[in-house]
Image (cartoon, rainbow, N blue to C red):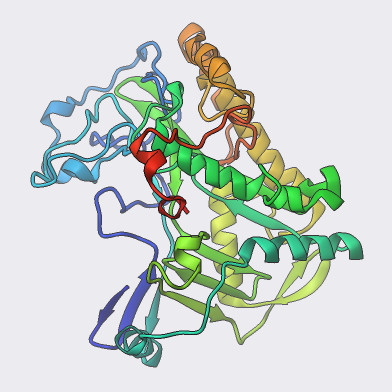
Length: 415
């Protein structure tokens, strides 16, 4: 949080760190090009970065001569922390990675600005709050209970989960990613779909119909970098919950024990509940929505499913079958299929073991073998949404070995 003169406060999950600023274009490159292209053509193994043949119409700009205000991300602000973590932090204006070869990881955050007595109240809270009531992390149970209730009552209910495709640690995912990445993946999958305490295991009563109630997705982008085609995940860092088009929560807390137990990390959030109402639609019925919440939800959905560039995509009714199945899930499915076909991206739902991962990573990519066909395939990409690969390395134990520094660390470090 940043509070100014006790009159305005900015609250959200964004860190004061390199690589955090971004806009809705989520650029993968920063060489001073005037236009972001969707034609892809290079590769670095790991993180789904792909290398292919040169373009027939190479750019005339020389990256070596692009400096100062010609770049949006100076020095280490141009970052791909999964490819390489930051080093030499005392030299912030020196590049940490080769921006002519490695795409940056775009960053998605949401924040809120509050004014007047609310801003002063947030500041007073930080100064005076030394004790609190007992807090428990009941979010997963609440999601399960609400889905089971909807299932038993035969009513529509949807949960849209959007998270990073990979943890924010350095590691080559084509060889497994390393102990830190695997440890985070272990606990992520344990929450969502693996083990008896996961959300999907607790939804066993629903069986395969869980897909009617909850969706797990990530975000991905493709572009052109120095005459080559590249793709990279978008790191979802926003800690935001939007409910019923009437209220939303924006803050610093993750959905994990570290943020939610109340005795570990200090977190702050603003809860906004609309008092006014505007006509809307929910589940095919007339519905009174909150204007601020409705606008926020539609702005987010518009970017993710591509409605911002295709007005024919209707995002008015978020829980209707048409939107949930034919827009949201179909967009994620289509984009995932195309990216896997063109780039053989990782993580991937079809890779279940380390042995399969090694074989998968060695196979040729369409962008290398048939670049013209790759470009045609990529024209089908809509928005940023892709499915989160729930079966990635599902046959492996992703907990770090006990004889490693990651394995010696307590589970609280990762959760």
